[in-house]
Length: 265
Image (cartoon, rainbow, N blue to C red):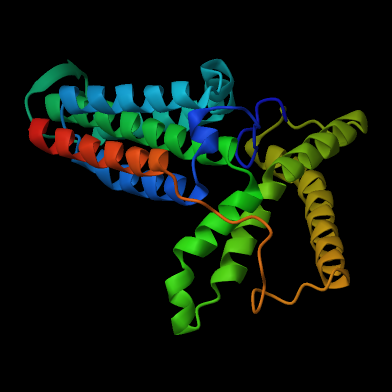
């Protein structure tokens, strides 16, 4: 399970994307999330696909590793695809089978929305794969720093998100261990009715929750023992530096948005 888990996992490598300032990565991803909604035809989605895979190539993350880690999303994307095919009734009818009718606009929306969702997940996955949790925390806190004047708990929010990302792989590993232990004790998670399968999950969830609360308590005790008192008066050992390549990456996404606006239907 851990071999396929990519959310919250950091792969230390030497690449253009790894060397970027974490603030620049957060800005680029935020801009990309807004830009992707400008695409509405084959040409604009083709440009998005090229940009996405060029970003993956620049990060030097193996594409096979990335796709294997997102394999569980296949069923969600497939569900989204068929949802739009069967319930979007606009345009000409291109296929009829009994009560099932597939419309031209429904097929187009199914392809485009599914592709949009897939590209969003690919790009956002690059953030955690190329940025350590501590860098994400520092970048997020720096970007939200102006909100401190409004007494918004910026440091605490960034820390919580960083800890959540950090412990996703740990909890998945713990789930895998508990699953194997319960199967060794005779629990069957794959047979029986839907009700029985749901009931068999209980022996998995209870130890997982207990383990999660225990880890949270141990982390809190460790932070208090080291004198952690929140972000007030806190200094940083490593300072973030915005470089020319960070500006270039942001400008590329803005240029991408301009291209999509020009070529959209």
